[in-house]
Image (cartoon, helix red, strand yellow):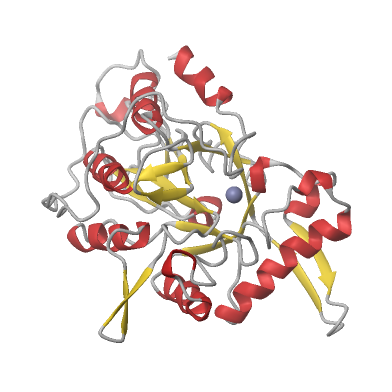
Length: 353
Ligand SMILES: [Zn+2]
């Protein structure tokens, strides 16, 4: 248990999103992109008697980068990504957005646990279109394609993933691909962003081109954040962004600027202000419950998903008894009973409004 926790801390931010992709320690399963996914029977949520409510428990905020053909430090092989969804479903997790987390809107049946999915950098492997007979279709092998298919088979899964996007980065990391990189046309970009918003996914700011905010003056930091906000507003007019993901996990010198600031466009003289409710780091382990007095939405830790970090995290939460488990009543915060408490149901939990 201790070892697992220190592994989270060692998941240093330094290589995140850097393009460096050291090989994984162990090979990932070699499922093919075109292989049909194993159908998963929709199962009703059955509260596990061994999983008593614990709404002060931890909630993993998962962090994905590339999704593609092979496994690497910053790439999840697409078959393995599908398996991640299946694993989480079977172990009683259901997605919530970052906005729901910070708003304390965790409305799950008793015995289930929230999980947050975040996708950084807006690469084509996350959301790719293919042209078929003049029509655009979502590539079933892209993360969005896999997700939508899974959600169709599991109606209580929903579309609660969070996409932390760039709009002006290189190598196709611009609203999921441009300039024909990986076959993605520049004119498809806004359509993709709009589609995600329409489907209920959360749109999150990851800056204009992934600037290392720690290196730049305050005005530049605010420009990077405000310009991505402008880009999202062009695709989805009026969209209210709630969350920023720090590129490389690096804070600006003036930390407050990560969530609150403004920038005036010198051409139009228009001022774009931002005031977000959540800031995502790149490591640190599962997040505290929003009901925990020490919950800090403006510095939320995440769990990078590579090799078997996901399984290790879930195992740790179960073994340590620190997993958030819903009591099925969104109006009551159910606390876990002390380990020594007798099994009498009336003594198993205390509640507060
Ligand atoms: Zn990034």
